[in-house]
Image (cartoon, rainbow, N blue to C red):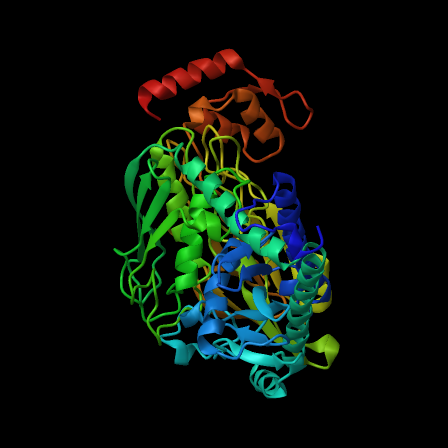
Length: 603
């Protein structure tokens, strides 16, 4: 097809083959945008950890394509493009807009988004979006996660509510100078800005290629039918669920002195299979807090939606069509809903968002056996802190970097064990873990250990994945480390009889090996010879551990996920022989007897 004449009548539908081809063509556009940014980003948080996402929305601001995008990023892109339309009545081809404002659709200020409108034959048809977490955004302290900020003014981030940064493809240098003057690593920021811009323009060009080949009428028809198909798939999946009203609550860790009891997170789900909808009611949550842990509207929506999508067939398209089946109820002025300016949303994408996402997917496990998920390992601990200082190798040049090198274990599901390289719930394995070698080359940091932990997984018929132990310190000058960790008190929960994961912890280790417990939220300085050692968390288990196949428990022991003692105490599996000389094997008779005794005693 190569012209609008291919659809002479408005009622004519595209063939299933063409529908599939075009869906993959647009996903291919997003993947090429992603590869562009991965290969051109300046800071390690982009070119190593891949803490960024790309996507496409329609001109009327429905989410259209998000291949490989992070849940925390992409489910709110349509709110951001809607803000562009609200603030500008003169959108033209060749424009580009910078948006990082959490009060008008963005996730949190650290996620800068470049939005480029895509025109064809004079008509605005799509928007391409390149969103990336920045190494620094001008906060009052050297971190992009300022949990203790009492309001947006103490937070200090530069905010750009859909600000035009290009006209006729020419950059407005005033904006660039503002950022370079305020941001601690201006060269890194500008390099990442150009990377996002290149990614967005790549997306624009590739959409032009598609329009050139298939014609505007065909593509507009495709958008309509793709949304309708996606909605039908979503409704079909929801209609297979039991009808239910589920209320569930969890708690973010305390954060003394401002939050001595923690943060309650509440959700009410109404599953209606007769019409194929799920209502997600967040209105019973607390008012906005005087700290940086408030959720933006985008994060309230995205992490609720992600919790549902995680429990449905993975081939359901995540776009504006399937969104029609999710009914969100949010309250203005709520910490988990719609924030009220100037309450800070600095940490909106992680901590409380992780609790919300976990809560939704765990609530769906209450539907019965075979539904939902356990909670995934969570908490922005030592391996996901922000480091800063001066680099003696490069004339004491300043550096700031968001580490993404820790790892929390994934949740168990009805079908399988948790995903080892999960990361955190809001990215669900879609980010990369930093490279040790790239980080040590790029920054004056030395990693002493990164290893999976033993006997920490949430046990179950299917078990959660383990977290890691990570230890690092500065290689020369003192290093400032800022963190806002969760799950140091309240772990990821198991469901349907599955056990909870472990709690995390952080310690400062001096040159003599003495260990001092670090606070869960704070800022510390490490000198050469001292280390920050963190225990990351594991995912919760799904189902009764005593129903796990003993052969799978033996495999876990061989892989050193669990010890023989843990296998016996938690799973009731008795082993004989030794792991070191490969004589380890099951004692099935002793296992049956031990499990029978544990069931009787309730252990």
